[in-house]
Image (spheres, rainbow, N blue to C red):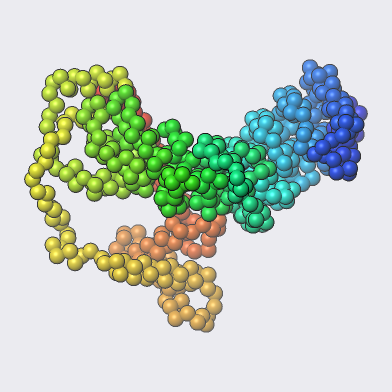
Length: 563
């Protein structure tokens, strides 16, 4: 606590007076319906703080000292943020002149942002975070970040319905890694949301008898954040086009929300498809991967998400390109499930030609960001893609038109040849090392048995690594311990010639890929995971550079320069 100083404590004392007005109203249980007398007292107390700030805002040293004056209860900013209806202009002025106040902690190591997240207002949270962005990453004494508190982690939120999705969305977009942070009690954001949702089951979301259903209205979403239940969170997030991170969080916390329906019988996938305007592909793909059965669900008018998506899938731009053309040419990646969904909505898109007579898969095979699974799905749909005799050269006029439009619109020069009819029979080409009889391929039963064997070996590895008993009941425990000791001492390991070391390292790598513990006792687990992360970062950096070079080339219509 700082020494008593009248000049420094002036602002703090005014904040205490404001807090006193709030406490008096709270004791009368009228905080949500403040009487005229209490409202007048609150306004007067707020005006006193406002007048002090206007009077001293040009006295930098005095204003800063007063704003940062702190007791065990924190600064005056901590005090006024306990009010749900605190005037925004007070906090805005505070942050404008003394933004460092946002990093001052109280006795519980709480920042002002922590206080604001108890019953958050998006405007207040944005002011505090914009003044001090790193505040979203700072935990209080029990390990809770502002996001944990906004999700109801401190218990002041009485129902999951009281949560503000826009605040959660803002905090997650500012610091996405907060989704993986756990408190000192080992509680993640998902755990906190699930805890509150279990308390709040039982809401009735049915449309009342005789109520007219409307295609374009979402009755459950027209209510404010204090009026919809857990199963409707996903509907609300998708309808308002909130971030993909928040939608992932809601799917993890409320797994059944992907198939939950509103009064008109529509799921989140219905809304995502009906409002799709070209920038919601990731959301649709995420919903499909979470609950594939949602694609076949019908609303009260008998429409499926596929039917809603058909208009977007078939719409063509000025280049004659449909959605599949654009995704194949410029997408940073999409899943096979989304590709199947898109083709189901508009089957003709597979062989549809754009202005340059180019089909989607010609773009796809030039897009290095697409996965091999997506490319192979194209091949499975049209094996003749691989036929060399299926192409002809473009004539000079077509080449010139494509070159000009490529420079104007940034199109790739992927189609210097056009498709012609392929009539000959395609025959498989033998690959070296395979048997013509096909016996080298594992059957489904053999693959299942192999996976079971690997799983048992991983379990034995985890047991042996932590077992200190000399009389262990496991028959293979001592044998696995011997293998681990061999791996630590083997001199041939560095040359890659020891078969035992290869098998043990393979088991360690498989375990590391699955391990979620912060500090694992399995030998080399942490080191292998760190190495995997480094390789992923390097690969991502390579992909980003390759994508940037491709985009630069396509924009300028030329060949990449040699560097």
